Image (cartoon, rainbow, N blue to C red):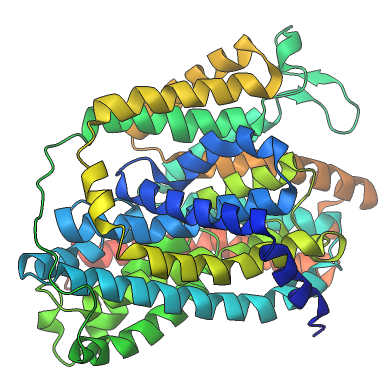
Length: 500
């Protein structure tokens, strides 16, 4: 492996403006995690217009910092208020809040910060060595391989979402439909524009992201998630004791491994990693009955896992151009807006961006570690701001951002419509993640498939004549057939415990 570009990436990171963007990103991410309901995907969507005037490396460093910074921010409310700021910190509530009730909130938040730092750093080191290998392999990809990759990405996320399989697939199908609005990528004929010149170029990704993640989340949270939030006055020690560290060290190691592996998988991500890491810890513990009653390792394992997963989820995005989760889909769009298509060519054509972003995570994790404990009191005070004040301010920022894209009031109406669609989806139990992911991958899927059909003279069996695409086709079948069957078997076992 050539370490020249890797070292050059540090020169990009240590440019003063990039260090500042990294610091702003992780700080803002922590703030987003503390404010329940907003989430990194919504925040990144809202900030996308701001990145137009920023250098590509700096823009992605900023947005990436928001993503992995939010993982720790959600821990603060989980521990102090029993209110997860992020879905990935739901498991932390079980033991974290119990520790807070015992006067050990500082120990819980301290071990979460340390575990997050270790898990994130370990994941970055693995990313540094693995990502170039994946990119070299992916350079051999043609239209057929990209077609199968896009299909797998859409379907895995659609089938691995929480809730109904049918709803996940329906949301992905709607995303693919929205991606077809505009001009045909091959013959440039208008499609589904209904005579509107405004739709001739299609719907901008920023508008879709802001509508489904920004406006929709705000509307849904205003209706369902407002509640009185109790305060907590005593935090105890700022850092865990030596005994607590000894109890947590193996949990941190296991959490790092679980988080890295699941973060790479489409549909895995920080949330699934935290749940699996907690389950692994419960099975590994000599005293499993302690977990859920204030066990420090019950905080260390999921917090380490969700940060490791947040980092490793950049591997499929940067090397294959396949977003592993909804937030990665938004970052995918951010790179496209900068004129940098994610994929195997990224590491060759834009090494400054690739290695600048990867190496910025080392620095970002150090910033998180240094900021986490001193800012706890500040974040708790922010929790007292009424959502009735925050929501309209967020909507205002969203609308200004949308208008700034093309100076179009039509876009503002579209984002409102999509926001209402997203709100309706959440009310009906549909997740917006598969829709956004399918929208991002839709154009790649269509253009790659049609180019493949031209190469194969319309013969679908051509996908099986190329080794890589045939292997990916097999994985596609596993995603479509095997995964749903396994889920159904597991559900039946849960309903009937006597089934073996």
